[in-house]
Amino acid sequence: MNTSTTYKKTELDSGIRIVSETIPYVRSVSIGVWINVGSRDEKSEVNGISHFVEHMVFKGTKKYNNKQIAKSIEEYGGYLNAFTSKENTCYYGKVLDEHVEKTVDVLSELVLNPTLNPKDIEKEKTVVLEELKNIEDDPEDYIHDYLDKTMFGKHPLGYSVIGEAKNIRSFTKNQLLKYIRNYYSPGRIVISAAGNISHEKLVDLVKSRFENNKRKNNNHLERSFKPVKAYRKIIEEAKPIQQSHICMGTVTGGIKSKNRYPLVVMNTLLGGGMSSRLFQTIREKYGYAYSVSSFLNMLSDCGCLGVYAGTSKKNIQKTIELINNELKKLRILALNKTELNRTKAQVKGSMMLSLESMSSRMMRLASGEIYFNEYTTLDSIVKRIDAVTIDDILEVANKYLYPENFSVVIFKPSE
Image (cartoon, rainbow, N blue to C red; front, side, top):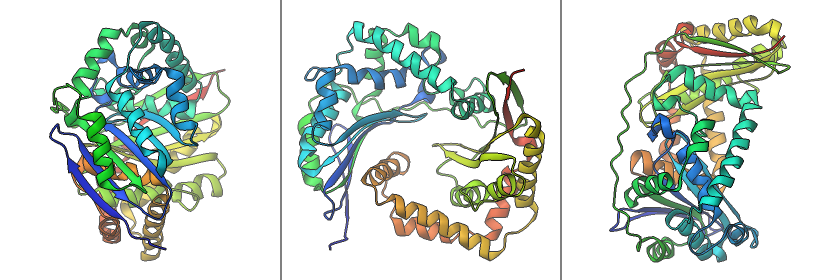
């Protein structure tokens, strides 16, 4: 079996960047059209518009109605979807290699030619409002949005991706058209693909579908992030739920930070999986929680390291004390080499296993291009993980892991 892969990049005259990884020993291709814009680029009065546009393009384009879009890829056994994050919007499909041309055609229609019918806009408002209710009914999900709002306040990083109900109800066709003209411009678009496709074929397909649009190359991103001073802010809310939920977090360096890989290793050690310190202490030793984990979200210029736990109302304070104790241990007690090496092996293994997925490869290609304007090889990442030392972990722990720097959100069962 041929296990070689080939990475290539092309930048078109319009400013659109195309990155691909040819993997000839699979039959599938995953393709994503990424627009470098998300909820952090919104003003408060239109918060949620990035996500709403993502919904609306699937309602119909010049070439396809909504049913045709739904069937276009699925009828071949493929998959078509989209997502919006704080910094990016992505439309993507995964198909057999023989259906690549159709997939690029559909994706181009979604991005370039949505019809935005006013009747569909009103109908989709109801759908998105139901999605919002669904999130609010899931405290384990909703509490993370609440934590962002608590940590970042009125800064756009504190906005939820889905937006507020009053904003969703207010969106008009003119607002959506203006948003697309301003942000869905060639210089913000990265098209990435991984699987059994040649780069030359992908470039030809993209040229034929994307190069005829008349949008200006508006690539100026005004993402001003004034460093937020991390401090301890505690929010408690009573909700009609059975279990208490705790989510705490602090501001860290972003994806370009020199602390990136030490933070990744430390986060895995703290709460990444069943062997992590938080899981072994809070669940296995004390039995206070069924679900407990840590998370690390890295953006272009900052990040968030946090901990989530679900516990009973009577064990809230005990659980928080145990979490704070694990943070303290990381600050004052050096790891032994065995634990460090095990954690690094876990990080590398998880990363390598993810590369068996063409979608994961496609997303990694796009992320590298958007944030670093380059392709980071797997060998390079492995070397950087291997280079993390015990002292590196102590350094980032003593920089970030102080309880007084963590905002805390607690959802408690109402009486």
